[in-house]
Length: 281
Image (cartoon, rainbow, N blue to C red; front, side):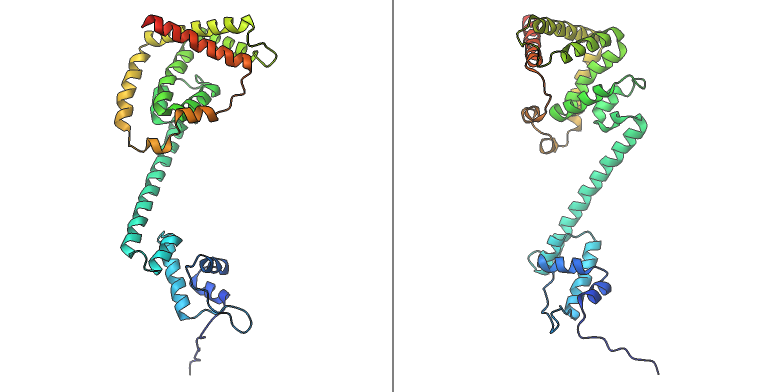
């Protein structure tokens, strides 16, 4: 005769977890969030799980494998929401995850194709700079583009790319930019903001900026910038406002630690440039 096994009427939490393919810790969590009713404790103070509890645990595992969230499971079990509604929400979640994976794969492919952190920037920016030879862009250039993209979006960074294209292809302008950067760094907290050198440096920045603009126009990069607006408008999905921080908010949260002298130099440069633009209009 074959030995007969008599199934228990109730089992301990460890046995319940083993049979359902989960853990005692997970089962306790289900109790805490109201997903699984907590059974009464036996004479030894331990919980005992019956047939209905095991059925619930098995359904929880199957729904979890399907990607249904614990909140949606609870709603489904409580009959607060129709199962079709739960499945509809799940399908939307999976579609969003698929879109995220697609974006991640595209970013990885850009990184592999470009072979530098440039591939992490938006395609609009990457495409503008992809023709430059390796090493033409400095890490500080990419840092500046990263900040600009955060504040002004891909279009702003793609337009700023004209500056770095020009610097990469005009050694004289790059050398002048380096000289000005060194002069800016020298404007530390020991320099009086109203020192004459601050105004002189602002004038040099203004002259350098105008020279950059002339080189950009001579290379036809300004025409390429105009086409960027058409490309960017065509690629808009309508979700940009939800993911992009406002320019004003972003500027107030980005620290630079400029000295008072350097801050005044930036302000004077902006005034000079604005004056030139107003005079030319």
